[in-house]
Length: 141
Length: 112
Length: 287
Image (cartoon, rainbow over all chains, first blue to last red; front, top):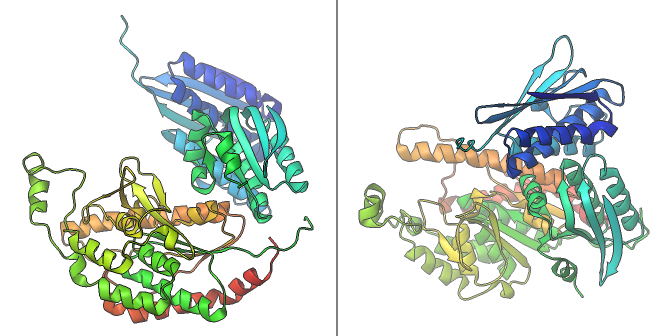
């Protein structure tokens, strides 16, 4: 399992995404899966940074692990609880555009990943788990 | 990510190269906003140089196309690469936007 | 905002899948005609394609009602194909193929030809788009040229009931499979104000037969698809998508043409409810 922790500020976004993609490839992800990882991890991390932390300091942790033919990516934060199942975020003061756009991002994450799970972290924060089924590893020669 | 703007027939072409993501989206929004404010409402986004877009790119696009259409124009897409096209399809954007295989067709689509 | 001169907004009417309930579109047309509100574009899907085509070709609502009542009788879709069951049970022996359909479509075709003749999209006075689904890829296919008969026949090709229809090298089936209410087409083709007349399928009351069971599955999926597509396209559009969705007092079978007068009234009533807003949108010329 590979892990990277970075402060939840936008200047670290690409580093977290790149880490996830490289770790996925090292675990055997092909082009399709790597692309899916890039899209989904960017969306989840960006979401944590802009809506979770809202500019305040807080870590974002990305962990990548392969189990059998499944790639599991866990993205953890210490921001207020936010369950993507209820996206877009029901903030009534947010402009309509923002809420619509939020829904778009989560829709994309669900489309490229096979499973998306959310759990609260303890004592505070969220863990979003992204699951991508990989093609079977070729038998060792 | 880089952009270059050129007039082509009735259309204004915004050539985009690189990656449209959470760190570059605002930059692209500014380009579209600038062109629309100048009255260039027949826009073509030339995407052959774009290797990647995330939902951030989709948000920029949606905002731009709505504004263009409100002014009687449109934003059309030309030559998206495979990964970019996939994201557009998954998000349902190919259903609401005109996507062309090449720049010439996209420009021609706006009429002579 | 720019100081550009106000331009007239383009009005589109999208008629979704719904069998004879689509006749509500005639009520909508009556109201708009009465109000002098011109329609710039018609988009039809499945049963809605018949109403969209007649409208675009210039049939008045009365002419359309008369023609459709005359042509779309119950017997049109009750023409059984005797071989169909055999093809289902012994596919290889009896040659089950991509052209499968439980119903004989010869009468359907004849009636469509009686109604539309050789007319093509080019004969339409108003812009017309007909939605079908590519049977191989599941993608929405928009038909906007060629013969009207071919486009409508493809758009109403309910899988299992009518055989898929080949148009332009693609095997097409009913448009409802990709989107029962294709508002996206109106958006992509530059409409401003969109009147979307869609119909949710009623749930089966009793699941007492395999056919009802299958229909219930299809109904659940279609209604969910309708709602999610409608939500997305409403959000993605720069201007208004107005859902004109009549409430029908009683359950209406897909082919109950005797109910048409009432259905037309319901459609007119649903349109009247939105009329003040429609008038405001169309008279305010700003983009």
